[in-house]
Length: 460
Image (cartoon, rainbow, N blue to C red; front, side, top):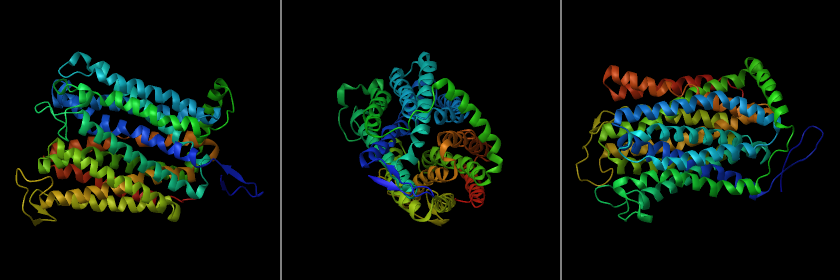
């Protein structure tokens, strides 16, 4: 059994064994395919290209559904977190919202190409699944302080994040390599006929990502329910509702007095907005700069996920050794460097130095500028994971221990409430200047402001 230092009276706190910790880590593995397959690389592009009337309206509709789900998550996360703290238990909440993820994701199979009548139901399913996965993550994060001693929280958080990236990679390889085929050739990325007789003409390989995500979650979240201990129950639900709302009001009213915690939540809001925007527009920017097709963008995504896996694992160790604030600071500085250099990369130049442009028909990423973009993308992937993992680790250090789920709810709020600002600014500046680089340059401000606020946070 793992043990940690107790209080001043020299009591000893007993932590659960390795099986409990590993089972908890697999929640990230179970949930990550939703973000990899549905929101980023497969289903979202499929919806915009083949379900919606046209790509522009598809992007807009998907954005509206994302915003609606994000608003619900932002408003309800602190409330539900406070209720969970008052009731004590976490697993019933994870099970309930996990069920929403499974139901919503599985229903996305109905999104047949060229059928606009199904769009409202499809977007509703997407919004339900998004709410489910985000809330389940809030309550899963809140279990961390009971699993390992404080000096190992960073490693636990980083390992969970890295494990999630591996799950995302494998799910993407499974779909691109064996299930989703090119409608013209009928072959997958690996040159195979799709498994289970999936029809490329009906894009069944793209649509199967919904049910696959739901099944994947059920399989890999089960060990957490079996082997990871929950908090003990404190109050019946009705009493927990009253107590939780009272505690939330107290926390919000006292937040201005907790200057470090308030500054960190504000910093997290700003740099998370920049990071999410960077990931969202990185592939689009590459496609516009180099003319990359789906295979190249998908391969680029896999490379970034591999870098994120190692970054999350190494970042967790650095978190325990040097503290989460230093890991976040270093990550933001590297991200700033990568963005600034990316803004100097063109098809035929790097840092304004001319290079040979890629030639049509060349191998993947044959051009020097393309390879430079890949390296910079790996820096972004390798630092994005520890940035997010160390952020939840720092919150655990700053938040009151008896209200940890509530503060993870506030953490989710700050990560969602302004998430539209980054994409909106990128779109507006790009439209006003007709320059992709000018639009992406706005992200520099997000990371600079986040760094300035973080500098005033006291880690303990």
